Image (cartoon, rainbow, N blue to C red; front, top):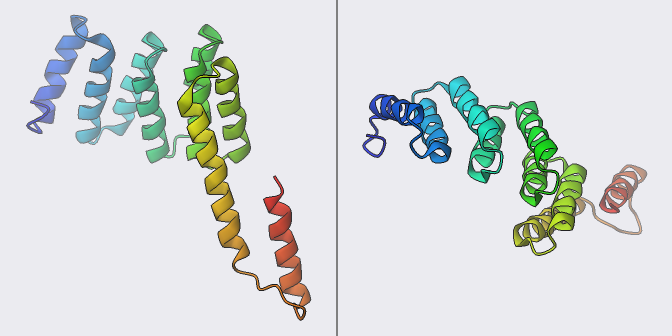
Length: 174
């Protein structure tokens, strides 16, 4: 029913599946998807939250919760759930990665770096954390480069442009 875009029907059957413990972890994602397709974003988020509390190790549920929260500008919810999961599993590198990912998506550079680095500290072989950390610095560098292109450095720079240029250079010194 879901693949045929029959969301009400799929929703009904997912709820039955959930009741009888059929593929519990995945069913939270599917049920959330149908709620979203039926324009019930609030319930979609609620289902993911419930699923994550039951299965904090399930990264798919967590990432869907983060992405849906970002789409709907609900920025406090994912952090609460990630922190709850970290309390249960303080050595789980995926949770620190998820927190870094959330901060990355909300343009909080320093927190994103901090949590990606914590993820790496928990698991030095975790490729995704290195990749995202590298991409984060790369994107920051590109943004600073693009910002600096707005200034022309010359012997005859006026004081306004010089101040703006110096401000951009200062920002680039992380």
